[in-house]
Structure formats: C-alpha cells, structure tokens
Image 1 (cartoon, rainbow, N blue to C red):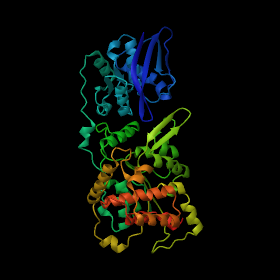
Image 2 (cartoon, rainbow, N blue to C red):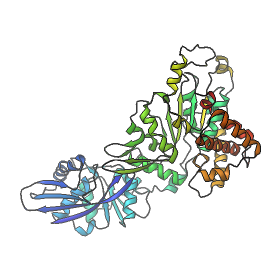
Image 3 (cartoon, rainbow, N blue to C red):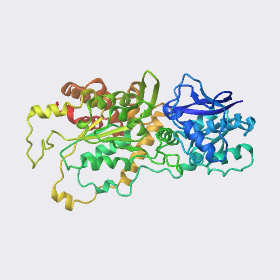
Image 4 (spheres, one colour):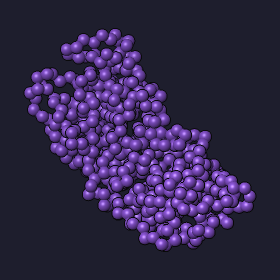
Length: 513
C-alpha cells in the first residue's frame, strides 16, 4: 500500500512543499528513509515507531519505505515526524486516504505520541496557501501562528491519536484563536522597556541629538568615547524612540523570528522592533547567517529593528567586513555548495567603541597611556569601507560628577519619539510607494530628487569633501542625514545649516584617522 501526505520544509525564510510518500512493501521489517534526508529526519524512524506503539497502534511488520520528494532537495528538521506516522497508518488501512487530500501536515513526535511544535510555521502556512491546499494540521503549540495566514482551515492537535481522530472526522478539534495582523495591530508598540528612558541620560546634548536623528532617518550610528561616558546607555535607549512597525514590517520581522524559533506560541506576530546585541565573540556565521542548516544570523534577526555592536573594534575583522554588503543592500545573500539563500537584513546598525586601547584618549581628567601608533592600530581594526557605511560618528564626552548629581532629567523617550514619528511620516509621504521607507534607504536617484541643495549648501559640502577627503558614499550619506535634520525641523529643503550639522557627525573623518 502507498500513501502520500503533503508537508513542507523551510529553506532560509521560504517554505516549499515536500510530499511524504510512504510505502508498505513485502520483505523484512526495515524502516528506510530516502530523499536527501538529514540526520534529524532519518532519526524520525525511532520516534515514529515508539509514538505509534505508545499510542495504541501496531507498527506494521512489513518493509517501510519513506520517500521525501523532490528527492534532490536537502531536508532538515523534525517537522516530518507526524506526516510520516500518519502516512504509515494510511498505508496500513487505519486512515482513509481521502481524509489526507488538501491537507498540509507538520509536527514533531515525542516517544509517547505527543505532538511538539516546529519552527517556521508562518512560512509553512504561507506555502500551504500558495500551493492551493485548504487545511493545515499542526501542533497545538503552533496553531495561533498558523492562523496568521488567512484563508486556511487550521486543525490543532496535541497528540498522534488526536490527529488520527481529527482526520477520521471523529473529533472536533479545539479552534485556535485568531491572530491576524489586524488583531495584533492594537497591541503593537514601540520597542519600550519600563526601565529604559532617555530621561535617565544626564547631559550629552550632542549624543542625544544624534540618537534622535538616527531614529528619525533610520541611520547607522557609532558612539566614540571613554569608558563610563554613557555610550551603551544611549544606544540601548534608541529602541525607546523608534516608531511602531507597520503591518508589512511586522510580518517580515515575524517570519524571520519564526524560522529562528524566537516567537512566542501565544504571540506569533512581533509587536516591538527587534533589538539584538550579540557579544563581540560572535562568529561570522552567527552574525551574518548560514551554517549547515542555513539559519538567519543576528543581522537578519534585527530586521526592521536595531543591531547593537558594543565595543566594535573587539569583533572579528571577518565578521565586521561581512556586514558591508547587508548594510548597503538590506539583504544577506549566502551561496554555498548545497544551497543559495537570501535573508532580509534591513536593520539599523548602532555601535560603540573607545577612542584608544586604554579608552582615555582625549579624556579631560584621565591621562591616556597609548602612543599614536597604538591608537591608529586600534582604530584600523574597523576598515574605512565599513566606517563609510556608518552615517553618524559621534564623540561622547564624559559627564562631570556635578552634572550627574544635579543636572535635570533630559527629555523623555515619549517626547523625542513623538518628533521622530512626525519626521518619519514626512519621509513616507515624500517617498510614496518607493522601496525606501526612510531617508537612510534612499537610492541615488531618490537622493538627487529629494536632497537638492541651494548654492550655499553646495559650496559648504564641496569644501568639506575636499578638506576631509570624503568618499562618494560618504557624500551621499551626508545628504541623507541632512535631509533627516531638515525633516525634524519641518523644512522642505536641505539648507546649509542642515549640511553643516550632518558633517559635524563625521567624527572620524574630521579627525583624519
């Protein structure tokens, strides 16, 4: 007997249909799995056999052959356990094959027959709808996530016997609550933490201003200053002034989180922008993505959010250089012998670093013991091409003890966030339906269209390029930052004052290091 069950597998952030073909043939009792199955898939035979027997079903004393088609595509993960078990039951006559038609089935099995959740349910459900299937049979843990994709009947099961009864029509499964994008829209909030607020920051007017500009235009930002000056404190509060995600942004970020297994079962759609802060020991693969299973890296997990790299020069040079292409294009393209994947990576890079190895170069009270050669070598750990892609490079000076104790609180995140939201709204109206959602994402044609300068601003920028030796990329980024400053001031054109302030934030270019 032969049974075929529709299932799916996730490759990158996309899911593709996989047909699970189960044949019970004559011969010795052998369980073989073919079709480019990885170790976790071939191990399914042990889980499936125990789950069937512990659920009250006799394992057929025949030759069991499982084929995962198409056979030339590598299959990973444990989502094929449930379709394999149900395929064996259907081939053995315990399930009508008609009950399996039009149904995509995924799920991992425990040895006692319980059905465990799997990663990537959002793209799996989307693949089912794209393939013309009408029904999803999924683990109860993934039911709410599966309901995000409209137009699909979702059958949630907690065990193998429950799945069998549901397919036989003997059980009315508990319906999963609705979790559409619209239903989650009311819960969507900026990335806020009750313990974090810009009002906590004393002094630092220039750094606070740069933080607001970065949030308003989606610009990459680097803080340079001695230990204890407040670089990390400022960077972590950037998340509190970012605007809420749009519906499209929420869905895109949620798909990446779903593939990585980071979504909560009761809240499959992200309501806050991601904030990722990997340690400086992170590997190239963990930062960029890829590896043997083709997983998204930190830069993709921060899609539509913030990637914070603290102590930037301490990161591996190869890892930092791999960031150059994602920062420019907004995508990570990974080509390997076994696969070719594209992950979205439209995130804001926020980084911090000391001015020298000891950290006290330029400190007003603490002497620096580093010689110029050591300082140059330390800063050269960050390449010029990577610095070119960081729009704002800002010095963070230490705050005096008297200011720490007596200075009044700064503006709150709510007040600054309101200005950021207004500036983003102006950008969206101006950019219309283009691919860019904020000033930092503008392409060269859009820069020429929306960042035209008057004569005074043009002369100022030309003089800065000659004096500082700015590259063509840095020239465009100065224009983008100037456009954001004009948006915060609600000014239709980019003026000389806006360009001058944008040039001020090229700290390392101005120092000539």
